[in-house]
Length: 162
Length: 280
Ligand SMILES: Cc1cc2nc3c(=O)[nH]c(=O)nc-3n(C[C@H](O)[C@H](O)[C@H](O)COP(=O)(O)OP(=O)(O)OC[C@H]3O[C@@H](n4cnc5c(N)ncnc54)[C@H](O)[C@@H]3O)c2cc1C
Ligand code: FES
Ligand code: FES
Image (tube, rainbow over the protein chains, first blue to last red):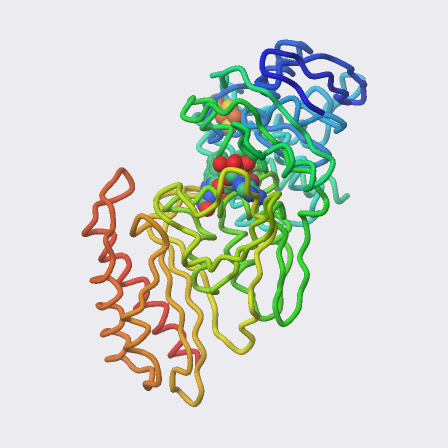
């Protein structure tokens, strides 16, 4: 694929199971593509500097910070955002665990936290609290003090093993 | 923040990438974890990006007497893979950034970016790795030690791509990468790559390399010389640690002052060597 400066690239991406064939400028960030072009505003822009993880989405099953990826890089790939984690308005076990453990206050970090938790628990079923802290450290929360988030992750991992 | 208007080329092969790079105002895009933030800040404004991030031919780990690692091998793949005789590569990869950064970032991108606080440059300097650089006009190999020129500066030419890194196995060496950070996920305040071979308590070979303490990876040659062929004991360890910290030229910045870094270096090397002494 060659796109000259100022031109748009044709890309094909599957987002939450739906295939989109769209044109984007190569400079467009994945998070802006999701929020502005697809109206999926669940993923948040917290820092815009790759630090906070509020923009975390899954690309081909791996968690990435969508403020630090171009939409063109996602061509041919499958993306899952927070909107894709529940079905029929039913919360996923992870979302339910966050709710039950009061793991959010303002909620700005929550989409990223939940997507990252989803990734962590898709990689391994059983984790220690220490591992959970290490694996979530790319996600920053300014409200909760993290303890309830860690409780939610541990709770979610128990629920998913049952 | 948006990058400036830019062109984009996604080659089907390394050969296509090299053809395109020749004579153009183009920058390679691998994992994007360093270049995209720079494009957003408009520190860099190339005309084109050449996206090699998905080239399968550049993503591999071939183990052997000399292990070859493809440039676009992700941090996560190195973090989840123990290479016999080069265990500290796995240890290093698992300490880079956070999970999301490790899912995208590549080992080659980190080396070519040559951030003076990055982790791999010090490690591959200690391992005396060979960088394999390819362009349309051929291929050349450069010692890690010569590859790094200064902050964000390497001996890569504009139309060259780092293809792979070759590293000789250090079987039988005690090896480790220690990283001191201000907070989880940060770049190193000071990082220490150490590989040491002992025979009945005598140092047979030793490589000591630091990150975060100079404009490029700092190989503590004086300290290595002091340790070579000597018995590893408390007084040797003190001597080597002092020599290592005196020989560096650490910067003062938001992570710490120069004199603080020097003290961290000294203690880090001392504690690490003492740990080895006590374990052996
Ligand atoms: C939040 C965050 C935390 C981080 N923490 C750390 C950390 O703790 N330690 C650490 O060491 N790093 C850290 N990094 C940097 C990270 O390791 C990057 O992945 C790495 O520096 C660049 O790799 P990349 O593949 O993403 O390269 P890119 O960003 O794609 O490229 C970086 C540079 O290298 C050039 N380049 C890339 N590949 C090649 C190639 N094969 N041949 C020639 N040129 C090439 C590009 O043109 C560009 O100039 C962090 C990054 C972020 C965003
Ligand atoms: S908005 Fe992407 S990491 Fe903060
Ligand atoms: S709940 Fe407010 S930032 Fe996490």
